[in-house]
Structure formats: C-alpha cells, structure tokens
Image (cartoon, rainbow, N blue to C red; front, side):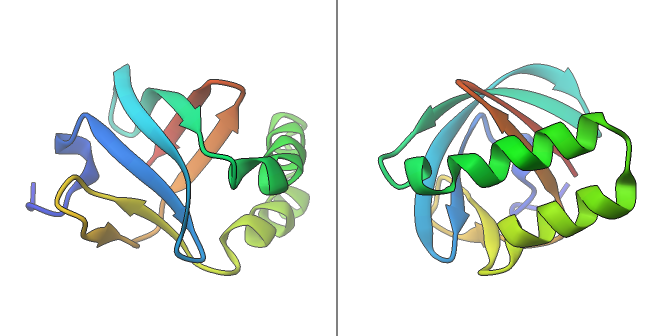
Length: 105
C-alpha cells in the first residue's frame, strides 16, 4: 500500500471538478468494495441526480449504459481527497445513495 492509497484512510473527501461534494467515513467492507457513510456538502445537491441515475443504471446491469452515465459524473475530474489534502485520481468507482457510499478501487 502506498501513502496515497485511499484504502488506508478512514475519512476521504469526494471531489468533482475540484469541488468538494461530501465527506466519506469508512464503516466496513474489504477491497475491492468498501462501505462509507456519506455527509454531503451543499455542492452535492446539484449533482445528486447524476448519482441517482448512475446507481439506477448500474443496478439494471446494462454496463454500456452505466458507463455512459458514470462518464457524466467523472467528466470534470473525479478524485478522492486524502487527509493530507492530496488527491487520489486513479480509476475508482463510487456509488452514492443518500447517506451511504460504496467505493470500488
């Protein structure tokens, strides 16, 4: 594990286009699927419909359509903010539903 590996951190920020959408606090799970509580910032309200559409498409198992939906989320740049302020920008998938988030690395 590298210092910039998000798995070793209990709290992460979710950034989109440099804007903090929310804070994620680890609650369980094992790699590759980790579970977090999610505390949205006011900026999340604007993109909440994108995350809802992405999750609905993901659950329908139409992966081509899901990828198009997820691209809308990650288009301006999706990153995890580590506690030291650095950003993890490698490929990852995050699903946000209400006050819960699932992270797949």
